[in-house]
Image (cartoon, rainbow, N blue to C red; front, top):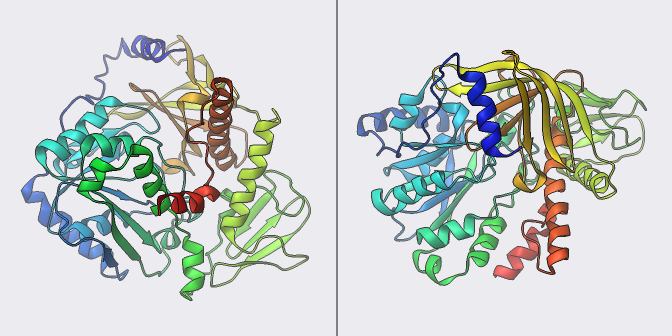
Length: 453
């Protein structure tokens, strides 16, 4: 189903209610001056207790406008960005669901709507307006979701092209400790972890004009290499919370001993497999150790990356498929927020995401996002207490989809979306006999860095 058809289905469903949709064409505002003291005060409240140390690198003479790209793992990332650019103002690229109930505030601080993992030329125009006409900093979190395992996630492959058009410097803000404070699978209680960041100009104004888009893209991807668990170990950061591994099975869903999917559970400091009985315990330095057998992975990101490799194998052997009944919610607008539109059937495989069913109004509904249209997807563990959610969007609509019977499947769906995209791109490139784009894995970053330097 095309985006036009998707939009017509939703329009029909909403006709009786006359729901006013988001107006994403609104131009970004110059951040209100009277909100700046509030923003700065909130920044101090967040960063002072956490240390909030920022080291600036290659920033002599740097001044707006520039593009600020930051990693994203917890709410402290926003105050860290404000602290890093003080006393300058910035416009923010913000996921559209964050505007619900606070549109005035988010527009007031210079927010720009973005639907996750869609290619929206309107958003690009808004960003260029901020950079070229307002001559402000424009801040975005290019991973477009929280880090799940304290390491970098895949980036949009068009960042280099954006910089070439904008002709502005690129600054990368990488924070450490932000993930360890509040992982997405265990947000509470907050852990007492210092937060350190580097604020690095990786592309100067002159280089934005002279380097190719590919060279800029490689610099950005190399700059986004980080690992919070390694940082914790290398800096002897002790986390004494007795809940430090609680819910870690949300990302470590596959037993690294027997290889079964969705058989892991976790509580407090332990993770175990219900199938083979293997049990691991996380020490105060974030390392996992088996307490009833041979070691498998001691480093959480290594386990996480192994799971990705297993999904990659399934995809390339044609074995990957997910199917379940789902509850679908539609994001109507800032005032209404999310509204349940029905329970349907969802499949995810080489055909992409397909949702079939009937809306609560009795109208047939079908949603489709092809593999080639999504290089990744956004997932939320227990989204606002409503269950595990998958964020699926078109240029006009945002849906949150909640599996009804499948257990702990989000992380695997996240991997599969990216691996299906890469495999599809490789097959098309082979057919056309041209290099595939955006098919490099996280492990290729060292080679990219070498290519740049």
